[in-house]
Image 1 (cartoon, rainbow, N blue to C red):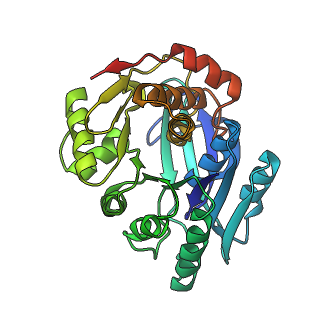
Image 2 (image 1 turned 90 degrees about the vertical axis):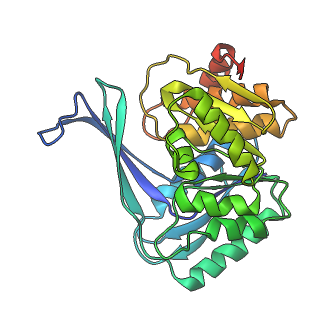
Image 3 (image 1 turned 135 degrees about the vertical axis):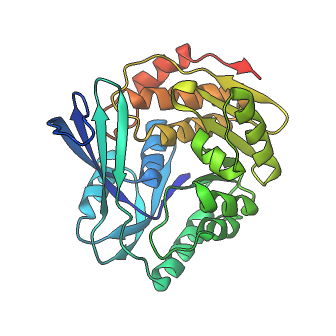
Length: 308
């Protein structure tokens, strides 16, 4: 089972604007609302690849149905620690002319110490029945920066633990030695505290992260492609040119593709091909709908892998 851990769920409101004018008037051409969060996307994406999945985490009572209805419709089981309040809203502004998404994200409600303890218990219980767990996304206000580290350490009964976080959450989480991390290029820069201007800079920084505790490191670079390393071998996939409708959930889809391949015994090259195929298919879908199986299968034929 693949378990997506979502500690700070959100309502993604995606609006399409023909040409975004900073500081000016912008008229929305279309919009959609999706209940989600990165851990929710993991559970949904794993299910799309026909892997048994589970969503766990924190949920707020006022508008929880926006998340649970989506999971119910997909047939994905879930277990949540419930709290009073309202799930935060994240606004995604898609500039159709440039194909660029601008994100405006709320922080979310404060979490209590009591619920943090309940989340630790929930995560430990899920670890005992999970083949892989993905700890991903922001933490709610009130959670310490090393909370992912704690959860990963307490999930030792799970064979494959993935961390997809940024800043101090990523730095602390590496101390728990996750089997895979998936930073984007900016997150890798904040981890290494260096400007990474070239593909070789990114490769060296990814290899360095292996020494910091990661088993594997996959770096996503948007239109720059993606790379995957175990510290000895490094493979690279240039981006595939496709119509971009939304980039939200693309990184989560990459993780799902990586897990699908790695847990099936694939090598680095095939794992990266599968991850990039899922991520590329996801950007072709509107909102946070991730990818469909047909799009994924088509992208598998188009993704090219190079050795670095």
